[in-house]
Length: 442
Image (tube, rainbow, N blue to C red):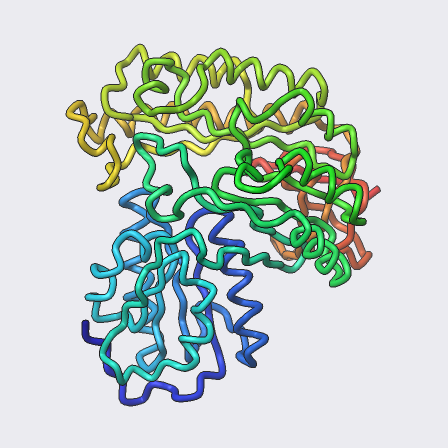
């Protein structure tokens, strides 16, 4: 496989930029790569600035994600004609040869090769004519790449998925489930706290499976250990499946340092479609889990992912999905049209839906989601919630601080105080036209 030849390619790169697509796992990996590049002496620059090394951390959950990655790579080459252009992430894991054949790309790294990316990029000069780093498939790959950002830290506690849902390519690009040892995770959280970070987000491909491959470890025991053995001020759990949320697990939220936000992928409200998807719960089980959470934690936010237009989804199936979403009243929904992913069993299903049907159903759910998000936030006006202030912005000539409450409400407030990376009370006062809550610093 031939490389892009650039006579002016920097032999000693001094700057780098990383563009990230997709999920929190990719965000975690990007932040780890950022730290490694910085430790190697390179300066981090914005994506729109010239860089000696430009990395696209790709997603492949839909064909739209693939297209976005290709567009970003070509745009990166146009902006940086002499840079080393690198692609990594799930698209690179799934289709390394296809990406390596693109004229814009110098190096391709699969997910399990990310731990070697920085050193190989720095050492690479393009002389060997091979721009594909072989994609490892074994479970011994280095996947324990914790990471930090400005105000919160994302720590990857496990990677991989053994569930193999019919529509999902993730098991092929992230591999089988592997857990990081609890002792190393507790040590990492301590290090992050010492570095000044106020919130830690536990993330993974299949978070509820944490510890199945370790001796006497589970998600429950890990969360309990982090809370009891560290001084972390806010701990957030990124995503869980309904059957993974036991009453015992919910009991942990009695500790106010554990953020009351539960993200549970729903995907469909039709049991027939859930079965075809190979999801391991029914619509009733999902709704009952939400009820148990809200009975114990009334102020918790519950968010969901929903797929519309799965092969064979009838009008009745979609109506069942709409009805359960309407009755649960999510704080927010991420709605996706079904996308054929080569290598998944659903790609072979014959009852593929027309694009216009998917679009119509998606529009209906997005409208419901927008209405419910606004309603959830309006119902909480007058509450005082802890806010982690993340950045300062200017709107119509006025300066505002923006932040996130413990129960995942985006807020902004005016204050003469320096609030960056501070946690204060925020009194929720009103909701603007875009759904952002206007708060008063308590």
